[in-house]
Image (cartoon, rainbow, N blue to C red; front, side):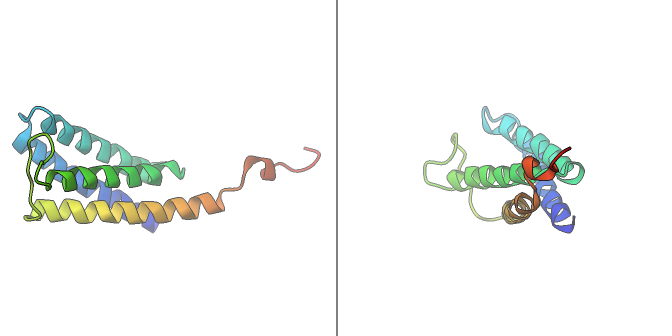
Amino acid sequence: MTVRLVAAAAVLASAVVHFKLWTDFKDLHVVGPAFMLNAVAGVVIAALLVAWKSWLAPLLAVGFGIATLAAFIVSTTPKGLFDVHEKWSGGYVWTAAIAEVVAIVAGLYLVSQERRTTVPERERTTVGS
């Protein structure tokens, strides 16, 4: 459960940063709504990590972390992302980036552990039942 809480905290930290970014950039035509979507998705995924014991919740955390970090990396390229050009500087940038890496690593660990311990349905049934 501890790793799930770490993953949930990481996803939630990224969500909080993206909510703050939404308040600053909500008028940007694509990126503004994407920040809000990211904030809402992060809260939902963090709640699922805590409340839902399926391996799908950590898989969502992995996808969230990869997608969010990849979008930021693209925004730091010379072409940017939807005319947004970012730099690897500032507290919000590093907080979100570190949180997303933690979400990816913790999520992958959880998926590998939980898929390994999940017994297929056909093996749970006993003969004659």
